[in-house]
Image (tube, rainbow, N blue to C red; front, side, top):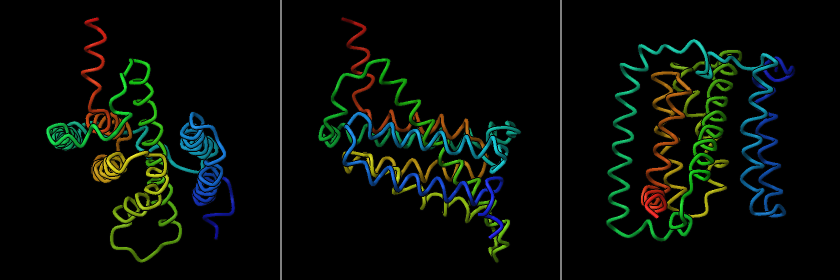
Length: 225
């Protein structure tokens, strides 16, 4: 229980964050549509930040500082390009099949403001995911559970925790599928590189490629006008 009884330990913030997420999901039907996503984004950003400044989680384990950029550039960039390439192929397939037009939001003109907002929200969500990965890894270490590879199991336990919170705010099946795929992709990338910044870049790029299929056309068309 020592991993949960003080705000200086990761288990405390893990429980608080999950409880706050459940509360936000519970009151979601009573919030204005424009407030629903941003209320969850607030939880994604604020509570992990409080955990960091109180020493509840390690910034190194979150992949924020002391990043091994040699490993990231040598291994992570290759994985990132493969993932983004697969996302690009999937986008072409979606556009060719006409499935993307089922997402009404994807057909709305994409402004530079909404583009930057999508990148910021991707960063907030990846921040939350990296917090979960770090906190779960530290809790497993404190509890000394008999796991062969604690780092490996912490990645996928964190992914299972994050999944329902990430899917709850997606309006279509297509976007829920894309979000789940991004969670798997960045979990693998984080396991090999432990680099939040690289995961954020892949997260945002993949989301814009797959969940915003009209993005490039809308921005280009507006600039020509």
